[in-house]
Length: 111
Image 1 (tube, rainbow, N blue to C red):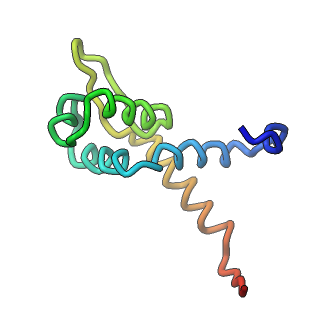
Image 2 (image 1 turned 45 degrees about the horizontal axis):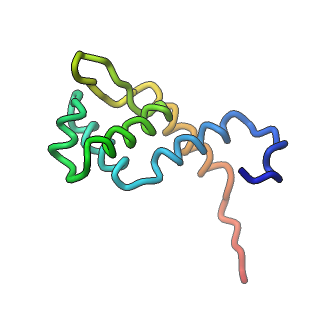
């Protein structure tokens, strides 16, 4: 961690955007979200069939997306069913929309 940043009191919106951005920071996670968006739900095994990567890697990506609140999982032994977390997805859209609309308004930097 950057020691210079440890004592900064970040706004909650900044922390939320950073968490979501981290989860969106890998192309496989974007593809998983696109896949889930076109399904009502899916199981980890379904994703292993769709993406040519190991089940453990799929699980790590799902964990990141779930930690960010973008997806939710329900245990259906012996499997876990995943779907988009619609409520949090709407919140994420609003956070990013506000960030992009309000922070950098056509300021031209001429270098």
